[in-house]
Each structure stands twice: as structure tokens, then as C-alpha cells.
Length: 286
Image (cartoon, rainbow, N blue to C red):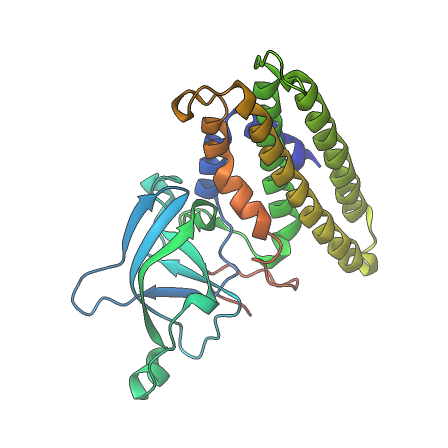
């Protein structure tokens, strides 16, 4: 619950900085199978920033005998970067993709001996699906922490958007921005209290009850994700009445700053393997 409160304040203060800090400090992709670059000619993967995320191209090799599962982590370097190298969300080196986007791996001896090799060309990866290998690896057993942190950031970012909406003026609007903001903020408040209660339930659960309590919490996180997305969309739509042009949009920068958090929260439950294993090495699913 303290994690939820801390990240809620962080997301409200500056959503972009909160996300950069989170992905720099914690490598949330560590439980996933990790493919490493294949560099036959010395040319490594290429990543370009684009609206809402990244364009990723290159060749990777799966670990020998590994099954990627629904999600796969792609690393830009053969070894994790050191924590002292100091890079954040603007320069991540781990990108998560859905395994269904992978081309069929080539057959034959080389693939069987050393792991399947595959190539991606300009694959879009949302900004919320990138993190840093320099961060402390989080395992599947850290799911409650991850959900509390990302939900906190999302609640805070959405609340900041309702604050901005409340300050807009829209003479003649059917629903004044301040009234709309109050209604949306109330919905956020109620959902946050509900999630906090679920977190409290997990923390107080007996060991034999914890798995069931965590499953209920996962559904609550999904519900919270839907609510936050609806609030952000509604706040932006209400703000259109005070908008002169796209360049003058008073809310668009806040929406842009919140986008990676919202992208990640939408899939935070699905990205973690559904068990209590807590690997300490990237891609180790033992």
C-alpha cells in the first residue's frame, strides 16, 4: 500500500519522470525468456524512437531449447548494462514483443544447436514495453509490487490530467470542464480505494490463502487499468471544448507523458508468468 501511495504521488508530479525512474531502477522484463542479438557481421539491432514508442530491427537468437511463451524480451546487447551507465527511458536496451509477431524460425542444425534465430524489421514496440537491463531484475514473485507501482503511477498521471481539466475555461459548454473533472477524479478516488483494499487483503492473507488473494488482485488491476484508460480518454475529450488547435491543446502533453505507463498497465498482469517463481537472471524461468 505504501508502494501504491509513493508511485501515485510520483505519477501525479511528473508521469514521464516517474516512468523513466521506474524503468531505470527495475527491470520488470526479467521473468521473460530473453533473446540476445545475433551479430554475424558486427551490426547490432537498430532502434528508432517514434510516436508512442520505438521501431526495432535486427536479428536475435533464442536461448537453446527455449520456448518464448506469449511474450519475449529482446535485448540490444549481449550482456546487461551496468547500473553506473546511467540511461533511462529515452535510451532503453530491453524491448518486449508478443511472440506471435516472430517469423517462423529457420530449421536445421544451427537453430537446434544454439537456439532459433529470427529477424525483425521495423517492428513497433510501445514505449511502455521498454525497460533497462541495468535495473534490478524483478521476478514473477514480485508481481504485487509491480502492480502496485504501475497502478500508482497510472492513478497519479490520470489525476494530474483531471487537475488540468478542472482549470480550463469553456464558456457555453454543456458540461463545464470543472464539473467533468470532479466526476472523473471521484471515479479515480473510488477505484484507488478499492485497489488499496485488495492490496491490504493480500498483505494480510495467510500463506495458504495468498494465491487466491493474488488472483483476485490481478483482476482488480485489470479493472483499474480499464477505469484509468476511460478517465484519460474522457478527460481529453472534455478538454476538446477548450481547444483552439492541436498546437494549443492544454492536455496533450500530459497524455503523451502518461502513454508509456498506460501501455504497460494494460498488460502488466499478462506480462508476468502466472506462478511464484522469482528468477534472478534475465530469461531464467526455472
